[in-house]
Image (cartoon, rainbow, N blue to C red):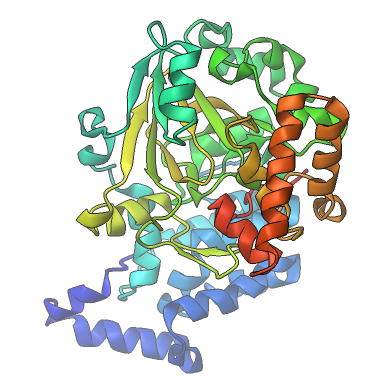
Length: 471
Protein backbone atom coordinates (compact mmCIF):
# COMPACT_ATOMS: atom_id res chain seq x y z
CA UNK A 1 0.00 0.00 0.00
CA UNK A 2 2.98 2.32 0.27
CA UNK A 3 2.08 3.30 3.86
CA UNK A 4 5.08 4.44 5.92
CA UNK A 5 5.54 5.47 9.57
CA UNK A 6 5.04 9.17 10.18
CA UNK A 7 8.64 9.57 11.32
CA UNK A 8 9.81 8.86 7.79
CA UNK A 9 8.58 12.32 6.82
CA UNK A 10 11.60 13.74 8.68
CA UNK A 11 14.00 12.17 6.19
CA UNK A 12 11.87 11.81 3.05
CA UNK A 13 12.34 15.44 2.08
CA UNK A 14 11.54 14.90 -1.58
CA UNK A 15 8.21 13.13 -1.09
CA UNK A 16 7.00 14.24 2.37
CA UNK A 17 5.00 17.23 1.16
CA UNK A 18 3.40 15.22 -1.64
CA UNK A 19 2.38 12.45 0.75
CA UNK A 20 0.89 14.91 3.26
CA UNK A 21 -1.06 16.63 0.49
CA UNK A 22 -2.28 13.26 -0.81
CA UNK A 23 -3.78 12.47 2.59
CA UNK A 24 -5.43 15.89 2.90
CA UNK A 25 -6.84 15.84 -0.65
CA UNK A 26 -7.81 12.16 -0.60
CA UNK A 27 -9.71 12.30 2.70
CA UNK A 28 -11.34 15.68 2.19
CA UNK A 29 -13.18 16.89 5.28
CA UNK A 30 -12.33 13.62 7.02
CA UNK A 31 -8.65 14.58 6.98
CA UNK A 32 -9.36 16.66 10.11
CA UNK A 33 -9.75 13.40 12.03
CA UNK A 34 -6.66 11.68 13.40
CA UNK A 35 -6.02 8.23 11.94
CA UNK A 36 -7.31 6.24 14.93
CA UNK A 37 -10.56 8.25 15.04
CA UNK A 38 -11.06 7.81 11.30
CA UNK A 39 -10.71 4.05 11.63
CA UNK A 40 -13.22 4.17 14.47
CA UNK A 41 -15.68 5.98 12.22
CA UNK A 42 -15.17 3.46 9.42
CA UNK A 43 -15.61 0.61 11.91
CA UNK A 44 -19.28 1.65 12.23
CA UNK A 45 -19.68 0.51 8.61
CA UNK A 46 -18.73 -3.08 9.51
CA UNK A 47 -21.98 -3.68 11.41
CA UNK A 48 -24.11 -4.77 8.41
CA UNK A 49 -24.00 -5.55 4.69
CA UNK A 50 -25.04 -2.04 3.62
CA UNK A 51 -22.21 -0.55 5.64
CA UNK A 52 -19.70 -3.03 4.20
CA UNK A 53 -20.79 -2.09 0.68
CA UNK A 54 -20.31 1.57 1.56
CA UNK A 55 -16.86 0.75 2.94
CA UNK A 56 -15.98 -0.99 -0.33
CA UNK A 57 -17.13 2.06 -2.32
CA UNK A 58 -15.06 4.35 -0.10
CA UNK A 59 -12.01 2.29 -1.01
CA UNK A 60 -12.50 3.53 -4.60
CA UNK A 61 -12.73 7.22 -3.64
CA UNK A 62 -9.02 8.00 -3.47
CA UNK A 63 -5.68 6.40 -2.82
CA UNK A 64 -5.55 7.76 0.73
CA UNK A 65 -9.07 6.56 1.53
CA UNK A 66 -8.24 3.18 0.05
CA UNK A 67 -5.47 2.73 2.62
CA UNK A 68 -8.00 3.18 5.43
CA UNK A 69 -11.03 1.46 3.90
CA UNK A 70 -9.09 -1.71 3.08
CA UNK A 71 -7.62 -2.00 6.58
CA UNK A 72 -7.68 -5.69 7.49
CA UNK A 73 -9.11 -5.16 10.97
CA UNK A 74 -12.21 -3.54 9.47
CA UNK A 75 -12.86 -6.49 7.17
CA UNK A 76 -12.10 -8.96 9.91
CA UNK A 77 -14.77 -7.24 12.02
CA UNK A 78 -17.19 -7.21 9.06
CA UNK A 79 -16.66 -10.93 8.43
CA UNK A 80 -17.24 -11.86 12.07
CA UNK A 81 -20.27 -9.56 12.30
CA UNK A 82 -21.85 -11.05 9.18
CA UNK A 83 -20.96 -14.71 9.64
CA UNK A 84 -20.03 -15.18 13.30
CA UNK A 85 -17.86 -18.30 13.15
CA UNK A 86 -19.62 -19.70 10.08
CA UNK A 87 -17.11 -19.03 7.33
CA UNK A 88 -13.98 -20.49 5.80
CA UNK A 89 -11.00 -18.20 5.39
CA UNK A 90 -10.06 -18.00 1.70
CA UNK A 91 -7.59 -16.11 -0.41
CA UNK A 92 -5.04 -13.71 0.99
CA UNK A 93 -6.99 -11.46 3.33
CA UNK A 94 -10.07 -10.85 5.46
CA UNK A 95 -11.34 -8.49 2.78
CA UNK A 96 -11.17 -11.23 0.17
CA UNK A 97 -12.80 -13.70 2.57
CA UNK A 98 -15.68 -11.28 3.13
CA UNK A 99 -16.05 -10.46 -0.58
CA UNK A 100 -16.14 -14.09 -1.67
CA UNK A 101 -18.62 -15.07 1.00
CA UNK A 102 -20.84 -12.08 0.20
CA UNK A 103 -20.64 -12.33 -3.60
CA UNK A 104 -20.89 -16.11 -3.77
CA UNK A 105 -20.22 -17.87 -7.03
CA UNK A 106 -22.40 -15.75 -9.33
CA UNK A 107 -20.96 -14.24 -12.50
CA UNK A 108 -21.47 -10.76 -11.05
CA UNK A 109 -19.59 -11.83 -7.93
CA UNK A 110 -16.76 -13.24 -10.04
CA UNK A 111 -16.38 -9.96 -11.95
CA UNK A 112 -16.37 -7.99 -8.68
CA UNK A 113 -13.59 -10.16 -7.34
CA UNK A 114 -11.57 -9.70 -10.53
CA UNK A 115 -12.02 -5.94 -10.26
CA UNK A 116 -10.84 -6.01 -6.65
CA UNK A 117 -7.83 -8.14 -7.61
CA UNK A 118 -6.94 -5.64 -10.32
CA UNK A 119 -7.04 -2.77 -7.84
CA UNK A 120 -4.55 -4.39 -5.47
CA UNK A 121 -1.66 -2.62 -7.20
CA UNK A 122 -2.99 0.84 -6.29
CA UNK A 123 -0.61 2.33 -3.72
CA UNK A 124 -1.68 4.93 -1.19
CA UNK A 125 1.74 6.51 -0.60
CA UNK A 126 0.84 8.19 2.70
CA UNK A 127 2.24 8.33 6.24
CA UNK A 128 0.30 6.70 9.08
CA UNK A 129 1.60 5.19 12.30
CA UNK A 130 -1.82 3.69 13.02
CA UNK A 131 -2.02 1.84 9.70
CA UNK A 132 1.64 0.86 9.73
CA UNK A 133 1.60 -0.50 13.30
CA UNK A 134 -0.92 -3.21 12.55
CA UNK A 135 0.99 -4.57 9.58
CA UNK A 136 4.33 -4.29 11.34
CA UNK A 137 3.10 -6.34 14.31
CA UNK A 138 1.53 -8.91 11.98
CA UNK A 139 4.55 -9.35 9.71
CA UNK A 140 7.70 -8.66 11.72
CA UNK A 141 9.88 -11.52 12.88
CA UNK A 142 9.61 -12.18 16.61
CA UNK A 143 12.64 -10.69 18.35
CA UNK A 144 15.18 -13.42 19.25
CA UNK A 145 15.31 -11.99 22.78
CA UNK A 146 11.64 -12.85 23.22
CA UNK A 147 12.11 -16.43 22.02
CA UNK A 148 15.38 -17.15 23.84
CA UNK A 149 14.75 -19.66 26.63
CA UNK A 150 18.04 -18.73 28.31
CA UNK A 151 16.52 -15.42 29.49
CA UNK A 152 14.14 -17.26 31.82
CA UNK A 153 13.88 -15.80 35.32
CA UNK A 154 11.01 -18.01 36.47
CA UNK A 155 11.57 -20.57 39.25
CA UNK A 156 11.77 -24.04 37.75
CA UNK A 157 11.43 -27.59 39.05
CA UNK A 158 11.77 -31.06 37.54
CA UNK A 159 8.52 -32.99 37.83
CA UNK A 160 10.46 -36.19 38.56
CA UNK A 161 12.06 -34.57 41.62
CA UNK A 162 9.40 -32.14 42.91
CA UNK A 163 7.07 -33.70 45.48
CA UNK A 164 3.54 -32.47 46.09
CA UNK A 165 4.48 -31.34 49.59
CA UNK A 166 7.54 -29.47 48.33
CA UNK A 167 5.42 -27.71 45.70
CA UNK A 168 2.94 -26.70 48.36
CA UNK A 169 5.50 -25.29 50.83
CA UNK A 170 7.89 -23.66 48.35
CA UNK A 171 5.41 -22.24 45.86
CA UNK A 172 1.68 -22.49 46.53
CA UNK A 173 1.72 -21.32 50.15
CA UNK A 174 4.08 -18.48 49.21
CA UNK A 175 1.93 -17.59 46.17
CA UNK A 176 4.93 -17.91 43.86
CA UNK A 177 4.84 -19.17 40.25
CA UNK A 178 6.91 -22.11 39.05
CA UNK A 179 7.50 -23.98 35.80
CA UNK A 180 7.23 -27.72 36.39
CA UNK A 181 9.31 -29.19 33.59
CA UNK A 182 7.84 -32.44 32.29
CA UNK A 183 4.76 -32.10 34.46
CA UNK A 184 2.41 -33.45 31.78
CA UNK A 185 4.84 -35.41 29.64
CA UNK A 186 3.01 -38.67 30.41
CA UNK A 187 -0.39 -37.54 29.10
CA UNK A 188 -1.83 -39.51 26.14
CA UNK A 189 -2.52 -36.09 24.58
CA UNK A 190 1.21 -35.51 24.12
CA UNK A 191 1.45 -38.12 21.34
CA UNK A 192 -2.14 -38.05 20.17
CA UNK A 193 -3.13 -34.40 19.66
CA UNK A 194 -1.57 -33.74 16.27
CA UNK A 195 -3.27 -31.31 13.93
CA UNK A 196 -4.09 -34.16 11.50
CA UNK A 197 -5.70 -36.27 14.22
CA UNK A 198 -7.66 -33.35 15.63
CA UNK A 199 -8.87 -32.38 12.17
CA UNK A 200 -9.97 -35.90 11.30
CA UNK A 201 -11.62 -36.56 14.67
CA UNK A 202 -13.10 -33.18 15.58
CA UNK A 203 -12.76 -31.13 12.40
CA UNK A 204 -16.50 -30.49 12.13
CA UNK A 205 -17.01 -29.97 15.87
CA UNK A 206 -17.76 -26.43 17.04
CA UNK A 207 -15.35 -24.81 19.47
CA UNK A 208 -15.38 -21.29 20.92
CA UNK A 209 -13.05 -19.06 18.90
CA UNK A 210 -12.92 -15.36 19.72
CA UNK A 211 -16.37 -15.65 21.32
CA UNK A 212 -17.93 -17.38 18.28
CA UNK A 213 -18.77 -21.02 17.57
CA UNK A 214 -16.49 -22.20 14.77
CA UNK A 215 -15.63 -25.65 13.44
CA UNK A 216 -12.10 -26.74 14.15
CA UNK A 217 -11.30 -27.07 10.44
CA UNK A 218 -12.51 -23.52 9.77
CA UNK A 219 -10.34 -22.34 12.67
CA UNK A 220 -7.34 -24.07 11.10
CA UNK A 221 -8.11 -22.28 7.81
CA UNK A 222 -7.91 -18.94 9.64
CA UNK A 223 -4.63 -19.97 11.30
CA UNK A 224 -3.14 -20.86 7.92
CA UNK A 225 -4.47 -17.90 5.91
CA UNK A 226 -4.82 -14.83 8.09
CA UNK A 227 -1.90 -12.57 8.97
CA UNK A 228 -3.21 -10.74 12.03
CA UNK A 229 -1.50 -8.74 14.73
CA UNK A 230 -4.21 -10.10 17.08
CA UNK A 231 -4.90 -13.62 15.76
CA UNK A 232 -8.13 -15.41 16.59
CA UNK A 233 -7.69 -17.74 19.55
CA UNK A 234 -9.54 -20.97 20.37
CA UNK A 235 -10.42 -20.77 24.06
CA UNK A 236 -13.21 -23.21 24.88
CA UNK A 237 -14.56 -23.72 28.42
CA UNK A 238 -16.84 -26.61 27.41
CA UNK A 239 -14.52 -28.70 25.26
CA UNK A 240 -14.76 -31.67 27.62
CA UNK A 241 -18.52 -31.87 27.08
CA UNK A 242 -18.37 -31.76 23.27
CA UNK A 243 -15.15 -33.76 22.83
CA UNK A 244 -15.05 -36.34 25.62
CA UNK A 245 -12.04 -38.14 24.16
CA UNK A 246 -10.00 -34.98 24.66
CA UNK A 247 -11.06 -34.85 28.30
CA UNK A 248 -9.85 -38.43 28.75
CA UNK A 249 -6.46 -37.68 27.20
CA UNK A 250 -5.22 -35.56 30.10
CA UNK A 251 -5.37 -35.52 33.87
CA UNK A 252 -4.93 -32.91 36.56
CA UNK A 253 -1.27 -32.97 37.70
CA UNK A 254 -0.83 -34.35 41.21
CA UNK A 255 0.23 -30.93 42.51
CA UNK A 256 -3.29 -29.58 41.90
CA UNK A 257 -5.42 -32.71 42.20
CA UNK A 258 -6.17 -32.60 45.92
CA UNK A 259 -8.03 -29.30 46.07
CA UNK A 260 -10.51 -27.91 43.59
CA UNK A 261 -12.99 -26.46 46.03
CA UNK A 262 -15.37 -24.94 43.48
CA UNK A 263 -16.33 -28.61 42.88
CA UNK A 264 -18.46 -28.23 46.01
CA UNK A 265 -20.84 -26.16 43.86
CA UNK A 266 -21.47 -29.09 41.52
CA UNK A 267 -22.95 -28.07 38.18
CA UNK A 268 -23.28 -24.50 39.44
CA UNK A 269 -19.52 -23.89 39.51
CA UNK A 270 -17.97 -21.21 37.27
CA UNK A 271 -16.09 -22.23 34.13
CA UNK A 272 -12.80 -23.73 35.22
CA UNK A 273 -11.08 -25.58 32.36
CA UNK A 274 -10.25 -24.55 28.83
CA UNK A 275 -8.78 -26.05 25.69
CA UNK A 276 -6.47 -23.47 24.11
CA UNK A 277 -5.19 -23.39 20.52
CA UNK A 278 -3.65 -20.63 18.50
CA UNK A 279 -1.11 -19.78 15.81
CA UNK A 280 2.14 -17.92 16.26
CA UNK A 281 1.55 -14.45 17.80
CA UNK A 282 -1.74 -15.47 19.39
CA UNK A 283 -2.15 -15.54 23.14
CA UNK A 284 -3.66 -13.58 25.99
CA UNK A 285 -2.92 -9.98 26.95
CA UNK A 286 -2.17 -9.09 30.57
CA UNK A 287 -4.85 -10.18 33.02
CA UNK A 288 -5.36 -11.71 36.44
CA UNK A 289 -7.21 -14.98 36.56
CA UNK A 290 -10.93 -14.92 37.36
CA UNK A 291 -12.40 -14.80 40.84
CA UNK A 292 -8.94 -14.67 42.53
CA UNK A 293 -8.35 -18.33 41.62
CA UNK A 294 -4.98 -19.89 40.92
CA UNK A 295 -4.33 -21.84 37.73
CA UNK A 296 -2.13 -24.33 35.97
CA UNK A 297 -1.38 -24.28 32.25
CA UNK A 298 0.05 -27.32 30.45
CA UNK A 299 1.60 -27.12 26.96
CA UNK A 300 0.80 -30.11 24.76
CA UNK A 301 2.50 -28.85 21.60
CA UNK A 302 4.32 -25.71 20.51
CA UNK A 303 6.16 -23.13 22.60
CA UNK A 304 4.58 -20.51 24.86
CA UNK A 305 6.26 -17.38 26.26
CA UNK A 306 5.07 -16.18 29.67
CA UNK A 307 5.61 -12.80 31.31
CA UNK A 308 4.39 -12.35 34.89
CA UNK A 309 4.25 -9.57 37.49
CA UNK A 310 3.28 -9.96 41.17
CA UNK A 311 -0.14 -8.70 42.32
CA UNK A 312 1.18 -5.37 43.62
CA UNK A 313 3.17 -4.47 40.46
CA UNK A 314 1.17 -3.24 37.47
CA UNK A 315 2.94 -4.16 34.22
CA UNK A 316 4.26 -1.24 32.13
CA UNK A 317 1.77 -0.15 29.49
CA UNK A 318 -1.15 -1.60 31.47
CA UNK A 319 -3.69 0.74 33.08
CA UNK A 320 -6.45 -0.89 35.17
CA UNK A 321 -9.47 1.13 36.21
CA UNK A 322 -9.93 2.02 39.87
CA UNK A 323 -12.22 -0.96 40.51
CA UNK A 324 -10.20 -3.33 38.31
CA UNK A 325 -13.14 -4.08 36.01
CA UNK A 326 -11.47 -2.60 32.91
CA UNK A 327 -7.86 -2.74 31.78
CA UNK A 328 -6.43 -0.46 29.08
CA UNK A 329 -3.39 -1.85 27.26
CA UNK A 330 -2.17 -2.65 23.73
CA UNK A 331 -4.46 -5.23 22.11
CA UNK A 332 -1.53 -6.69 20.20
CA UNK A 333 0.83 -8.76 22.32
CA UNK A 334 3.65 -8.09 19.84
CA UNK A 335 2.98 -4.35 20.22
CA UNK A 336 3.38 -4.69 24.00
CA UNK A 337 6.66 -6.53 23.59
CA UNK A 338 7.89 -3.95 21.06
CA UNK A 339 7.08 -0.95 23.25
CA UNK A 340 7.27 -2.13 26.87
CA UNK A 341 9.27 -5.34 27.23
CA UNK A 342 12.40 -3.45 28.29
CA UNK A 343 10.65 -0.26 29.34
CA UNK A 344 11.48 -0.23 33.03
CA UNK A 345 14.33 -2.23 34.54
CA UNK A 346 12.90 -1.59 38.01
CA UNK A 347 9.87 -3.65 37.04
CA UNK A 348 11.59 -6.65 35.54
CA UNK A 349 9.07 -9.48 35.30
CA UNK A 350 9.38 -13.17 35.85
CA UNK A 351 9.44 -14.81 32.44
CA UNK A 352 9.93 -18.19 30.86
CA UNK A 353 9.20 -20.32 27.81
CA UNK A 354 7.13 -23.45 28.32
CA UNK A 355 7.97 -26.33 26.01
CA UNK A 356 5.77 -29.36 25.24
CA UNK A 357 5.18 -31.31 28.45
CA UNK A 358 5.75 -28.34 30.78
CA UNK A 359 3.21 -27.09 33.32
CA UNK A 360 3.16 -23.53 34.68
CA UNK A 361 1.64 -22.70 38.06
CA UNK A 362 -0.02 -19.26 38.01
CA UNK A 363 -0.69 -18.08 41.58
CA UNK A 364 -3.73 -16.06 42.59
CA UNK A 365 -3.59 -12.38 41.70
CA UNK A 366 -0.49 -12.45 39.47
CA UNK A 367 -0.57 -10.44 36.26
CA UNK A 368 0.37 -12.64 33.31
CA UNK A 369 0.68 -12.50 29.53
CA UNK A 370 1.12 -15.49 27.21
CA UNK A 371 2.51 -15.32 23.66
CA UNK A 372 2.53 -18.37 21.42
CA UNK A 373 5.92 -18.55 19.71
CA UNK A 374 4.58 -21.19 17.33
CA UNK A 375 1.24 -22.88 16.75
CA UNK A 376 0.39 -24.11 20.21
CA UNK A 377 -2.08 -26.41 21.98
CA UNK A 378 -2.53 -26.24 25.73
CA UNK A 379 -4.93 -27.11 28.54
CA UNK A 380 -5.52 -24.89 31.55
CA UNK A 381 -7.60 -25.14 34.70
CA UNK A 382 -8.39 -22.65 37.44
CA UNK A 383 -8.87 -23.86 40.97
CA UNK A 384 -9.54 -22.91 44.56
CA UNK A 385 -7.37 -24.66 47.15
CA UNK A 386 -6.95 -24.30 50.87
CA UNK A 387 -3.99 -22.04 50.13
CA UNK A 388 -6.00 -19.41 48.23
CA UNK A 389 -9.46 -19.97 49.74
CA UNK A 390 -9.34 -16.79 51.87
CA UNK A 391 -8.48 -14.71 48.79
CA UNK A 392 -11.34 -16.18 46.79
CA UNK A 393 -13.84 -15.64 49.60
CA UNK A 394 -12.69 -12.03 50.01
CA UNK A 395 -12.95 -11.42 46.28
CA UNK A 396 -16.46 -12.86 46.07
CA UNK A 397 -17.58 -10.61 48.92
CA UNK A 398 -17.54 -7.74 46.42
CA UNK A 399 -20.75 -9.21 44.98
CA UNK A 400 -20.03 -7.18 41.85
CA UNK A 401 -21.41 -8.84 38.74
CA UNK A 402 -18.92 -6.94 36.55
CA UNK A 403 -15.96 -8.44 38.41
CA UNK A 404 -17.05 -12.03 39.02
CA UNK A 405 -16.84 -14.14 35.87
CA UNK A 406 -17.27 -17.63 34.47
CA UNK A 407 -21.05 -17.98 34.80
CA UNK A 408 -24.28 -16.27 33.78
CA UNK A 409 -24.39 -12.62 34.79
CA UNK A 410 -27.53 -13.03 36.90
CA UNK A 411 -25.75 -15.64 39.05
CA UNK A 412 -22.50 -13.77 39.65
CA UNK A 413 -23.65 -11.64 42.55
CA UNK A 414 -24.72 -14.69 44.54
CA UNK A 415 -21.63 -16.83 43.91
CA UNK A 416 -19.98 -15.91 47.21
CA UNK A 417 -23.02 -16.84 49.29
CA UNK A 418 -23.49 -20.09 47.36
CA UNK A 419 -19.84 -21.02 47.80
CA UNK A 420 -19.90 -20.30 51.55
CA UNK A 421 -23.03 -22.42 51.92
CA UNK A 422 -21.40 -25.26 49.98
CA UNK A 423 -18.35 -25.15 52.26
CA UNK A 424 -20.53 -25.45 55.36
CA UNK A 425 -22.51 -28.25 53.75
CA UNK A 426 -19.29 -30.17 53.10
CA UNK A 427 -18.74 -30.59 56.87
CA UNK A 428 -15.00 -30.34 56.24
CA UNK A 429 -13.70 -28.96 59.54
CA UNK A 430 -10.57 -27.35 58.04
CA UNK A 431 -12.53 -25.54 55.33
CA UNK A 432 -15.17 -24.36 57.77
CA UNK A 433 -12.44 -23.04 60.08
CA UNK A 434 -11.00 -20.99 57.19
CA UNK A 435 -14.48 -19.68 56.36
CA UNK A 436 -15.15 -18.75 60.00
CA UNK A 437 -11.82 -16.91 60.24
CA UNK A 438 -12.63 -15.03 57.04
CA UNK A 439 -16.06 -13.98 58.30
CA UNK A 440 -14.64 -12.80 61.63
CA UNK A 441 -12.02 -10.72 59.81
CA UNK A 442 -14.69 -9.31 57.52
CA UNK A 443 -16.89 -8.35 60.43
CA UNK A 444 -14.00 -6.58 62.14
CA UNK A 445 -12.94 -4.78 58.96
CA UNK A 446 -16.45 -3.56 58.26
CA UNK A 447 -16.21 -1.28 61.27
CA UNK A 448 -13.54 0.84 59.62
CA UNK A 449 -13.98 0.44 55.87
CA UNK A 450 -16.42 -0.70 53.23
CA UNK A 451 -16.69 -4.40 52.45
CA UNK A 452 -15.79 -3.81 48.82
CA UNK A 453 -12.57 -1.94 49.56
CA UNK A 454 -11.61 -4.49 52.20
CA UNK A 455 -12.23 -7.39 49.87
CA UNK A 456 -9.83 -5.96 47.32
CA UNK A 457 -7.19 -5.31 49.96
CA UNK A 458 -7.35 -8.88 51.21
CA UNK A 459 -7.62 -10.53 47.82
CA UNK A 460 -4.86 -8.40 46.26
CA UNK A 461 -6.34 -9.48 42.99
CA UNK A 462 -7.39 -6.31 41.16
CA UNK A 463 -9.98 -8.55 39.51
CA UNK A 464 -9.57 -8.24 35.79
CA UNK A 465 -12.67 -9.89 34.38
CA UNK A 466 -11.69 -12.85 32.21
CA UNK A 467 -12.08 -11.41 28.72
CA UNK A 468 -13.15 -14.64 27.07
CA UNK A 469 -16.64 -14.51 28.55
CA UNK A 470 -19.04 -17.11 29.88
CA UNK A 471 -20.63 -19.35 27.27
